[in-house]
Amino acid sequence: MRALMHDRFGDPVEVLAVRDVETPQPGPREARVRTLCSPIHNHDLWTVRGTYGFRPDLPARAGTEAVGVVEAVGPEVTGFEVGQRVATGGTFGVWAEQFIARAGALVPVPDGLPDEQAAQLVSMPFSAISLIDSLDLAPGDWLVQNAANGAVGRMVAQIGRARGINVLGLVRRDAGVAELADQGIDRIVSVEAEGWRDRVAEITGGAAIVAGVDSVGGRSSGQVLSLLGDGGTLVVFGAMESPKMELTSGDIIFRHLTVTGFWGSTVIATMDATRRAELFDELARHLASGTLTLPVSGTFALDDIAEAVGASLSAGRVGKVLLRP
Image 1 (cartoon, helix red, strand yellow):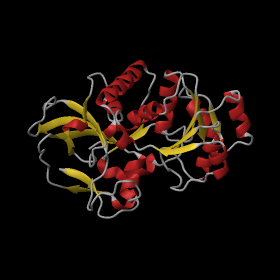
Image 2 (cartoon, rainbow, N blue to C red; image 1 turned 90 degrees about the vertical axis):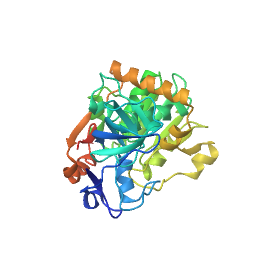
Image 3 (spheres, helix red, strand yellow; image 1 turned 180 degrees about the vertical axis):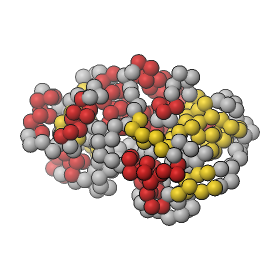
Image 4 (spheres, rainbow, N blue to C red; image 1 turned 30 degrees about the vertical axis):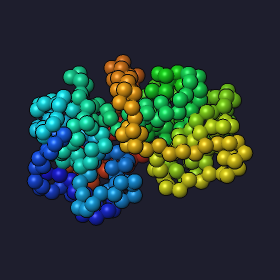
């Protein structure tokens, strides 16, 4: 079979290439899945660069989320059968024609859900809803996030609104405000504009902001932190711009602010199974009602990985870039 591989860490455009590899066989409590399509996430690209929390042994495969069809099951697998459509997130090496997944990491896909949405179901939407859930916010509370026009940012806004939470989004370009408005997402402020803090105060009406989410790093981390009310919490979700955060110690000390991290893989692995099922059910309801949308900006073949990576990193992209074997 064919799979994307890399022999060294570096720019995904330069190091990823399609190779012929042996078709893997499932072991106990495992299944082999034929890939239908798979999204490109930022953490997938960081892993290829060697800058993520997980560094695979080389040569390595890539990709962590996909929708596919079960082709074979190993011993001790129950609840799944050959021919069944499934999704998975956090399964390494899915940018291939087939991959091996733990049966416990597979989620059955409802018949009415398109492949393009099912391919995105687990990692980003579940991270977004788990993030909101972990903050224990009440209806009417305010949450501020940067990277509001990113995939997780859009989902946090949509899920937050469904829960009655006020979500304020920051973007780095003025054009991002209009782009999100076209998707029905408001309360967006561009930090490129003069007087953007006044605009924040206008939107919130001076209400205290309980929590903030930083997915950018660098100067943007401090911008989010500075907007929090006394006793607020800043959650570090990502570092698209810089792995270093520019924070003012006075804000943290004198206003008793908390800074904490959030890694979806750890949260999902340690979450109570009943709560995990409840959150997946909530996601399914939001998708069915149109409250949550999972747009696609483009679909590429494995051989076109360089072009696909470029599309994934392009500014103003709306929706995920997918790979289809």
